[in-house]
Structure formats: C-alpha cells, structure tokens
Amino acid sequence: MFNFDNVSIVLVNTSHPGNIGACARAMKNMGFSKLTLVQPEDFPSGVAVGRAVSAIDILENAVVVDTLQDAVADCALVIGASARSRRIPWPMLSPKQTARKITAENKQNKAALVFGREDAGLNNDELQLCHFHVQIPADPTYSSLNLAAAVMVICYELRKLALAENDGGERAEDDFWDQEKATGTQVEYFYEHLERVMIAINFHDPKNPRQLMQRMRRLFSRIRIDVMEMNILRGILSNIELNIRPKNLEAHREQELEKKQLKEQ
Image (tube, rainbow, N blue to C red; front, side, top):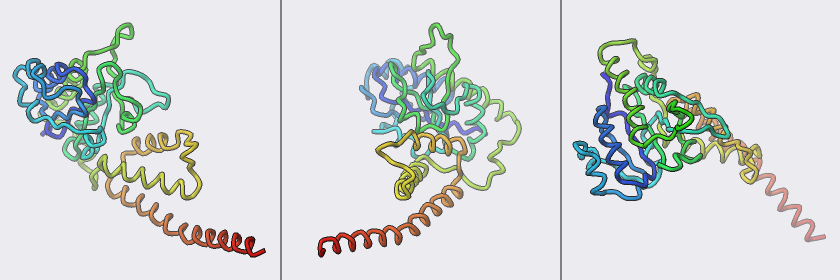
C-alpha cells in the first residue's frame, strides 16, 4: 500500500500566507498531510487558515525550519520544482515521471517535493540539494503557475499512480534492493568529506572551483547511492586522508629545516 505519510510537501520562503493555506487545501484534496515550511515570511497566519478551509489540521501540524537542508534531512529522494533551465543541466522529470519515481521508492524511502518562492522559485543552491527537478509542461506563452496549482498538479499525478498501485501492480525496483538509500544529511556529510580530500590532494581549488562540486553533486545525485555504498566511499576518503597525512607532515618538516638552514647561513 502506498504510504502518503512518506511524502512531504516543502515550501521555501513563501511570501504570502494565503498561498500556504491554498497549498494545504490542495494537499488534503489529494490525501497528503506532511507540510514543511522553510522560513515562511508570515506564518502562522489567519489568512493561511482562511484559505485552507477544511485543511486547517495540515497547517497546525506543519513543521517550520530554517533551511531546506533541514527540511530534507531525513529524505532519500528530493525532487524540486523548476520552471526554467539551469546553467548545468540537472536530471529533469515530468509530473508523471515524478509520480513514478516516488511511488517506486515509497515503501523504502521518504520523499520530499520542494516548491520555491512565488516570484523566483528555488535558487541554484537549493536546486542542488535535489536529486531531480520537475517541470510542469505549461503553455510557454504563460508558464507561470500559482503555487497551490503547481502543488496540485504534481500531487494529483502522484495520487493517480498511488491508487493504481494500491489496486495491484508490478513490484518496485527497490523491493529487491538490499540497502536503504542514503539520506540527505548523510549525502551532505559525504560532499563535505569529498571536497576536503580533493583540496588536500590539490585536485580542487576552492578559489577557482570551475563548477567541480556542482558536477560531483550531479553525478552522485544521478547514481542515488545507498547506505552501504556511502560507507564504502567515506571509508575510501578516510584512507586517502590517512595515507597523505604522513607525506604532508614530512614535506612540512623539510620546509622548516630548509628555512632554519637559510637563517643559519
């Protein structure tokens, strides 16, 4: 059975509280109840309550956090809504493909659907926290959707597929998988570790990054590593650090000795 509680709707920096209420109503129409708000400009709000109508319980149970990273920390699948192409292309899904992706992993993994600001959407740093981007194929002559309408479109596609799955269907790919997918927090720790090691071996210059970390994020987001694979990668990085440390110390000693000899001369 599809678990609707394993899917969170995340709204980032929403400026108008009425849109939060309207999104809550759209969610309840489609059977979803987990709402997370990242730095909303005005919440709690009577305006949000008025627009929510009979979905006030969703507002009352909404979680408010400071960053998108906090909002998706326990999610192994994060899909962000993006209305425009980016400088570095990211795996792009349609609403129907998004529904398939979430449904296929629903038993094993928590998922987050992330929606950005009314006027500007999600910024590049926020989109890089997403494994995939979803784009609603609106008419290009007027492609701007109301926030609640965007939430409704994707939740509707997901609900259709969820109900079909509950009536019986093919087993999901992850039913045969032996490990859980790595969570958002685990992946972020890995990226920090990876960047630290690449700097230590002089492969990555943070002063001239050349989009290296963005491309590494894109690579591992596409692969979707599991917990065991994450542990292996972190182990490799730790061994690299362990093996380069003595060499660095020896080089430092030689430099200090040369400085001392020059002073004595």
